[in-house]
Image (cartoon, rainbow, N blue to C red; front, side, top):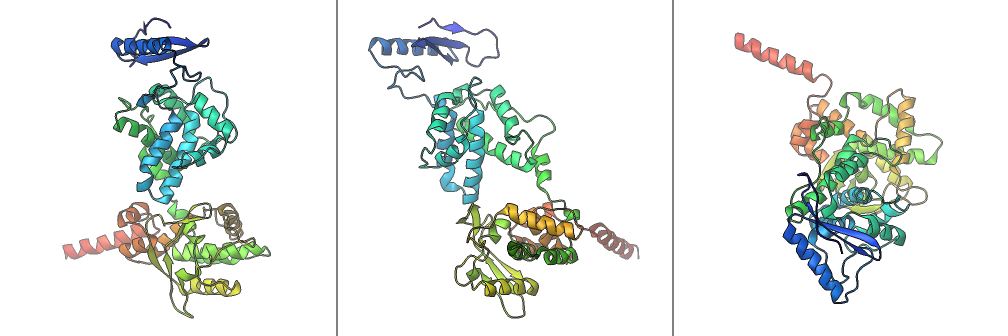
Length: 423
């Protein structure tokens, strides 16, 4: 046991340091005031005098319960998720687990070796409430190297913040994805502040130039580059080729474009959800979505009923009849009766777009194309929002004002109003 030391300088929140060694390995704890440091040192000496066993990893008596701010980051992340879990939608849970499984391995001791290959997979399972250890090596690495809440500082969190915006190969993530990951990680740390476990939030402010506004702009679709109805008709025709799966992705593309469905809603569509008359408008009851790979759950914004035009009715009727589907059968499955992957769907869409001379778009942009088509046709904002499962505010902020011809139409209407006033 060494004497209590004081670190010089005003930048230290906890200047008083207790240092001791267990089996030759030095340990330390820092405190805000001298009295707290003396009390902790005395407790260590009393435990030693009483013959208590000391933990080789923590350096503290085995029977001691950790202080709230002495909890390691991976343990706190799991506690945070367990607290929030009942109030979150399935998709929010999945997103938070993904974010924290990326974040936790970044908040470790500077001397830590690289994490085992299965660390993220282990965290993705273990962080969930009642999750179990799936990789002993990863669990041991986290127990050995993860920082405690009391050890978090601006430097370590700034580095974690930077790495959260990068892929494994160092290339940047999409701005919206990076923003989502950072938001979940910051919420996890912020909750410790809310509960008084941490005195202040150690997460550094965002550097100038990166803000929520910028991230929000990155999420908005490039509306003026989306395909119009004639182009989409040519794209759907070009999607069918000699590949058996091409017709599957053609039907999925038509459903997303003509019905405005999210990709996660398309892959969980069942026969029971369809109304397909012979020669009229039909309907899709959107009640399910893919919340994890091939795991059904609630839709992002609740159930809705979407009218679909005769062109989509014909495509879906032909698909259902050809594959002899009925009842609660999932409509879109591969030949191996598995969920179609979005990567294969995206490749099929990209090839068809190239065939008709249109720049590539994401699968999710089919939904944006549907919204712009309906707005361009003069469908009232409230009805478009209802079909999309949006609020009118979201619809307005995302689409209105970016459609081709909006400015010209507005100018004409304003000119008429001004002329009538002059007359």
